[in-house]
Amino acid sequence: MKLASLVFASAVSCAMAQPVVDNVVMRQAEGSCMVTVDYTLSENAIVTVDFLTNGVSIGGAQFNNVAGDVHKVVAAGNRKIFWRPEKSWPNVRLREVPITAKVTAWAQNTPPDYMLIRIDTETSHLPAEQRTTYYETGDALPFPGGVKNDLCKTDYLVFRKCPAANVTFRLGTNSKEYNDSVNWIGHLVTLTNDFYIGVYEVTQRQYEYLGTTKPRPSYFTADYAMRPVENVSMILLRGWCNYDASATPENGKRKYWPESGHDILENDSGTSNALWRVRAITGQMFDLPTDAQWEFAARAGKGGVIPDGTGLWDTVGGLSGKNRMIKYARCSNSGDISVSSSNVTATTPPDQGGTAKVGSYEPNAWGIYDMGGNVYEWCLDHWSVFTTEPQIDPWGPVSPKDGETSKSRVIRGGGWNTGYDNCTVNRRETKNALGGYNYVGFRLCLTLP
Image (cartoon, rainbow, N blue to C red; front, top):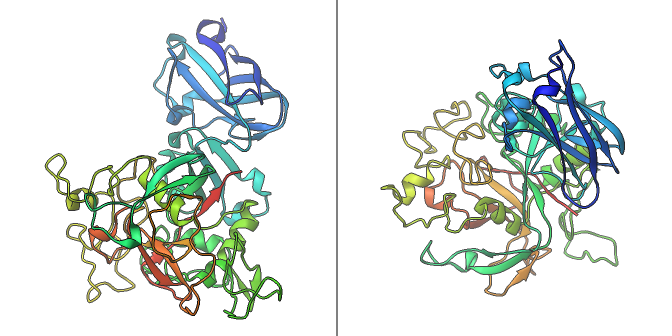
């Protein structure tokens, strides 16, 4: 008897009115472990699959070995998905469990929550679209542990979608949550678009794969692959461009990247910069997050200034703000880890001081790691103090203030050498974009159409 006739049903799901998934049929031939899901797709779209029992997902970890026309951009027509349940769900007896396949089509401008891009040299010959896959949940990624697997910190870049389109939120804070400062005074901000942001800070191994002429500028060298890259200036990220106070759009000169928009310099003086390489490898317009995007992602839909949604001065569950913050952040208060400049060197292991391996602490509510501590992260904006005026898609000033030569940019999140109160989601600081610092790295962001 065919197993499919006993336990398998089919279901159709689509993210929007168009594109449409139809004619979903799930079957398992007699004597075979292979499960096949046939479906028809009305137009090119991103396709994902889920398997349900009694209307509830069995969990992405139970089917993270699916193959075929799934978890990628799929062409319209009759398509197939293949699943070997015995490899990912070995202890289940399928004859005893009613299973339903749920196939979902996503318009390419409204993709699923997770995007995964392979960047290691073994796949460098493949076009970007063949190395890019999409998933509804972090545990559905195609390796054990899903988004927590070390491959997501080395051979792949993994991103989480932030649902920001037409959302108004409070950027900054107030004295009840944190000390008042004009640098982070609370005001309302509306973002126009969703965006993807890196689940992790870019690591030293990932930076090597980006193929820059200085593969590892980082200070920390011990067990380095999954530690965040640091000592990266804006020059290494965006390309070299000499500051010229006489620059105007009319004379064709530029001041400092990006004077406007998401400009980068492809190559100059033999430097192939990291962001240019990211765009070449992925085929996508990745950049640094704006100041507002960074804080929106760090807050993950919560208030307060600690990732658990509370104020720094609150006591929750018997724990002070300090003791809650150090669950999320590698900082100078992280337990017994020694971080003073006198006893941390380039060869200090990550479990003893300096930067930690990314993902070593708890994530925020959206599963994004190290938004506090480890390394500060460059933002796209030139520095300016906040005002109380509501804003839409703020960028900060497009160039340094008149007469300023420091070319200051916003940095966010605190670092391994700063106190827990410097690692809050609202705190902003600034650094000279020409410099490299062993406590400043970066995280990638992609604004969706």
